[in-house]
Length: 178
Image (cartoon, rainbow, N blue to C red; front, top):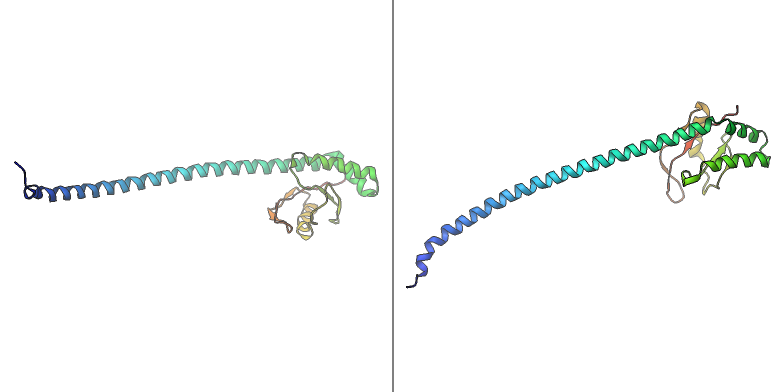
């Protein structure tokens, strides 16, 4: 005996409807599960990025404090003040200039600084370790004047130079004759 297609059909519609309902329910739960997982992944990523940002802030703060400490130490060393006084008294003296160049060179190892220069109280550059690609001009005058007035080490904000757009930061320290 064969079963006719009419006998099977009554069972087809309810099964199809049951399949559609189950597929819809599974899809809805799957979507909610996916959204929950996506939100958890985003939250984890934000926490990770926050931790990395906190570490970077700590590194930058440590770097900044180290540079300022070095500058304060260098500004207070007696031989630096003595050599500056000798050089400013006789700028034509090659021996005095060489002493200045010797200790300016101490600041450059490890490429910490791209330029090291000595300015007098009239804010004129007297010695530069390497030639400036472009003279600093007026952007350096205000921080220099502030340092000469206050006698304190100063770190400027980041800025772009005019030639090439490189980013720079100046650390200016006072060296007063003894």
